[in-house]
Amino acid sequence: MSLVPSTTSDPKTAATFCILEQYHLLSFESKMSAYEFYHALNQMSDNTGLLHVKDQYESFMWMICEWRHLKILKCSGQGHDPKGVDVTTQGECAVLCPACPHPGKNLSANWKDALQCWLYGLFLAIDANFQLKHKVVSNDSVDLM
Image (cartoon, rainbow, N blue to C red):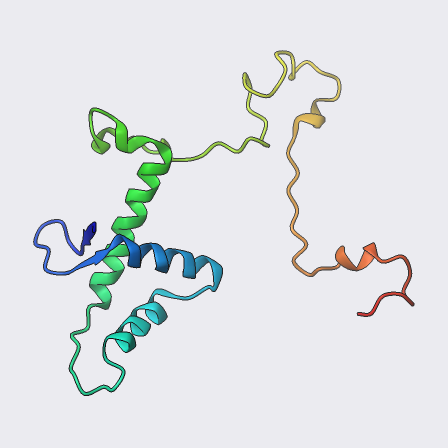
């Protein structure tokens, strides 16, 4: 069982990787905040309220921060650098978007000289008001909304 300490200098509290992974999944899937998750853990340890449980919320937040940092380093491959993670420079953990145009990777060599260079731009849109979804129906009498 692997533990993540609350601090690197003088650890007195730790959490398991299993608990941090569970929080990570719940925060994405059910939008559960760290505060709600921490107090749910407190309720699971003593739901009667008879025992005084020391508040470790700040330590839990430090553990989440450290754990996410470790996950970023792992996903970007920086954790296997023989020189250590200290030599990781700014931007090395970023993942390049495969849909974005990158010269030398997914653009032709003469993309700047092309007559239709606007084709190499990237257009992103989000339909936040769901107006485009309503245009998909065949006619208004069939639409139930």
